[in-house]
Length: 88
Length: 413
Image (cartoon, rainbow over all chains, first blue to last red; front, side, top):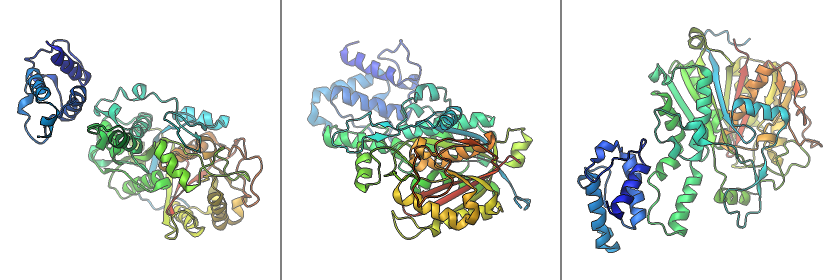
């Protein structure tokens, strides 16, 4: 895992009641028992860490967040797009 | 005499406190017995230009140790400090009551935990981040931390309360109103069990500035009824009771700590800061009427006693107005002289002081009372508590806005 992925996994672990060491890019977020409030805190932490804004609404299905890898891809995309893209 | 109506009676089967002089009932009581002062130099945040530099802050509270065992409420440790205090006090009270956790008659239970101002420190931190530190967003839990009903919701979740659950808000009468409403719910057969009281934790820069601007804080200490009193001292904490219908408590063999026999409430409808004699007197009278007790049956009165010039004189006159000659036989003390003024939580903490006074047959003192104000001429139990007969007790809460609430406790039936 690269630096972005490692940081994201660390953030996930921080918000898990029982942190696991076997999290890979393929791990589904549903397997991590992350509830809606945890997700809001995870998104906040990721945004803070990478200086990005993740468009996400707790009322909608979060398609981009199925697996750890999909979160990493989304974050990398937002980092590449730069701060201006966050406003979209 | 008292309680002959055959109606549903309300007893206390559990109590919990978090205060600057003790963060459990036992430690709090030991603090009162020792005449301990919870007042200390203000700290924990930048003091900048503050002029009032003392407060009764709780310095020995380990939220992890107190709350990490919570099973049903998974985010209590992410909550505002005021919810921590409420949760810790409720946990102590529920455990003392011996009720099963979660409650087994969930819809016949209430959780009424008020707060004068809710998560005010969360507000301050969030706004500092937004306006000063140019943060992009507030923490996702900011809203949940702030709302004044979050303490009642957290506690209700943990103990499985599915009946009436909400917060009261009446400044310094908040806890007393919460306990009074819970009493009425039980009497009126809405519920059999209630967790009731209040919690407060608002000591921060903005709060100190706001109180300072009102010029009612003492720069030196909290000296109720004393000639040298020059204002109150802000405090924090929680005081929570488990109330139960008497037969319900008896059936399950609960240890009954006291009976909650009377509740009275009035509003001065007159002035935001200057209290009236009539409003407080009528609240006390209504509480006695609810208890079906004559004034002379009260042995100990835990005064609102904030140590502001006007409250202590006014409260003294209201007591004299209602109690007549018995006012001079009555032990009246302000435990705020020790635990400071915990605002909305005051009535909850002071209810526990009243119940313990009956259980231990010992009345807590008013400390710092070397020279009484000539206009305050009752027996305020100066400086040293004392053993005496304590049958019935009264607890006064008189809030800004003229919002008055009074409780009367009696011995276990």
